[in-house]
Length: 333
Image 1 (cartoon, helix red, strand yellow):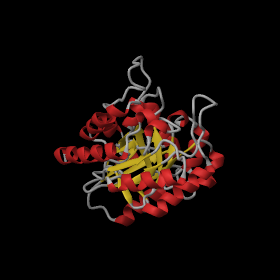
Image 2 (spheres, helix red, strand yellow; image 1 turned 120 degrees about the horizontal axis):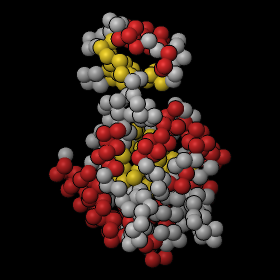
Image 3 (cartoon, helix red, strand yellow; image 1 turned 135 degrees about the horizontal axis):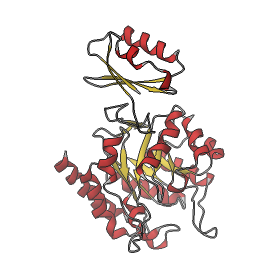
Image 4 (cartoon, helix red, strand yellow; image 1 turned 30 degrees about the vertical axis):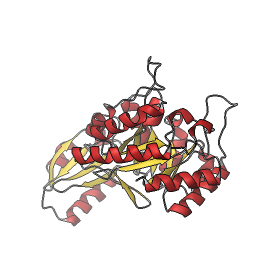
């Protein structure tokens, strides 16, 4: 349920209304736009007397929200949210590129890549330390050691770091990670999402392999219900019957989610396609569709990468993509 407040209402009147609503065992989310102030009510709103609320002098209108995702709903929060990742803003016109290798392999590797992608316009450095792999015999990542190497790369370049968490028990290891990634396989790991809701760390929530947008937003709702509203959604392709690409990139998800939610949306064309030569056209399409950013895999030696070399760009190829994306952003601004 949302209560739309009339223009020109004094702050203390809004505060008094919030206090009264909270006394009804409701959680109240205050959203202030340039022209509109909205109170989003979460909890058992069936007991709320809508007529009484609407007849209050400061209330213009009361509406029930039918969608199960409340906090993530644009009706709750009409203006785009901006997530600040250690000084890098994403959302509401702030476009950012996250770049780096699928897996952290060595100090020399991650530091070299970090320096190259930063020179080419990347704002954040990604690197897998804990790697969920389909086969138990594949490289599983350097784990805690990998996170330490990311910290070295951050110190060398000043770039905020992004890495994937697989287990809530590892949260203490992610203290120095600026943006915690929840991978596709963990999108519906609800116990993990609940724990992330208790943190104040920005969360990058990837779409599941075969999940609907509604299910994806409900996963975001799990985190937000715990009190953490710093969430960035990442479209990374879904599993379909097509076999020529690794997954099928759902470009339509970008404008559709922009209608449904205030949360920033970025696109990962590397995982969506699984083929490096397709990354550039899909990155350009994502920028044109209105994405708030990109996540691109970059490796200094893709042929010998320990993980996902086929979809990784070289630093020179990434430089070309970054410059081309900048031109698209100028056009669609």
